[in-house]
Image (tube, rainbow, N blue to C red; front, side, top):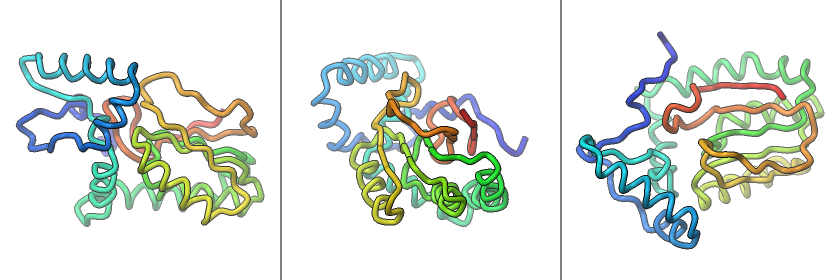
Length: 198
């Protein structure tokens, strides 16, 4: 099929040439006891397995996030261009009809494609809240600061989280809220450009 999930997409072997986790991720994990214990358990399990593997979420520190954004701009990487074209064609009318007031994005990264939805929300006069969710605190903070400058009047409330676990979303979200996964493929959780209205 044109769009799908490969079962091995959530695994990275030591032989794949992926570099060691940066000091940003190591320091962030060290500051959080629970996260540290979880990371150590996941790394120990992955490195104890016959086929060595690590959860891909640990590659999305500041540098890993920047590298992923660079990959999406390569001529060979067609999914981003295809998804952008679909969003540009459908979102203005869809957002207008739905009256979307909140956008919650899983794996936001730089929120490049999110801007298409935010622009549609702003054009419809409904842009109230954007909740970008990502595992990289530094990258997410930079993205949120940029969006606050680009969209004055839009409340931007970032959430640092692993989307495979329960999310702590803002208590008061204007509805209808659009939940979207437009960015990174982390493990086997969401297909590219999945969108759901709640």
